[in-house]
Length: 408
Image (cartoon, rainbow, N blue to C red):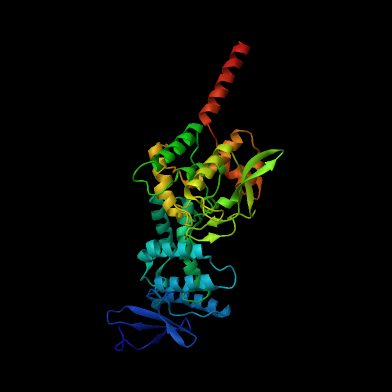
C-alpha cells in the first residue's frame, strides 16, 4: 500500500544505504546515500526505478570512493558545456597541448557535427550504444573510416575529460564501445591508381583553366609541381622562390628545391615540415625549373615571395581553396575515373609521384627520401601502388604469348 507521505524515505533493510520513496501510484524512486547526500539517478541521468538499479549504482559509487574519486551532478552539465571545458583544457594543458591547427579542426567538428547532435544533452545521458549508432551514421554518409575517427576525437576527448578530470560521469562510455564499432584515424583508404596519360591530362587541363578569362588564380604550375615532386600540400604552398636554386654539379647546373616549411590549414607559415625528417632536397627537371623562373619574372618576385601567391608579396591560397578551385575542378574536367567511391585528392598526387618513381626504377629508400619518409617501410606500405597497371599487364601478357609459342 502506498505511503501517505510521498516525501518520506523508507530504508531497504536488506541493503544498507539504499532508500526509496513511494509514489501515489505505487511506483518507487530509489536513492543511494553517498558522502552526505542522496543520489537518485544513474550516471547517465536516469532515475533509479528498481532495486537492482540502486544496488548497481551503490556499487559504482563504492568503487569511486575506494579509488579516492568524487562524483558530481552530471544531470546539470550539458555536452556543449563539457566540450567547451575540454577544448580549453586541451589547448592549455602542460603536456602535449593541441596545436592551433588541430584546435581549429576540433572546433569545426564540434560546431558542425557534434554540438548539433549532442549539444544540450546531459553529458551523463550519452551511452556507448548511442556512440556506436552515431559512428554507423557517419560511415553511411560515405565518410572514410579515418575521417569518421577524426570527427569523433572531440567526442571521446570530452567524455574522457568529464570522467577523469571533472568527475561529471563515473565512467567513459566511449571506452566501452564494441570493437566492431571502433574506427581508426590511421585506416588506409583506397587511392587512385594512376596512368601516365592521366597525369599528363590533369596537368594539361590545369594549365588550360589558367588561360580562361574567369580564372581568378593560376593553379597549373602548382598542380604540376605537386605531381612531379610528390610534395605534401602544405609543403607545396609554403615554397618560396629562394628555396628553388641552380647548383653546379660536375660542371653542369642542376635545379633543386629545399623543402623546409609548410603553409598550414589556417593560413600560417610553419618553419618546419610535417614529417620527422626535417628539411629535405628534391631535384627539379630543367623544364619544370624554367616554368618556375618564368613565373618569378612574371610576378617580379624576390627570394622571400611565395611561388604560388597570386602576386608578389602576397600569400599562397588556403589549402581549402587550392582543393576546391584548383585541384577538384581540374580533376573533374580531366575526367579522371572514380571507381568504388575512390576519390582523387591532392594527396593522391603524392601517391602518383612515388608510384611512378617506383615504376621507373627508384628503390623505396630513394623515393622515401624525396618525399620525406623516415623509413622506406612507410613508402613500401603506403605509397607504391600500381602505376600504368594495364600497360604492365599487357607486357606480361605478350611475354606469356611468346612463352607459349616457344613451348609449343
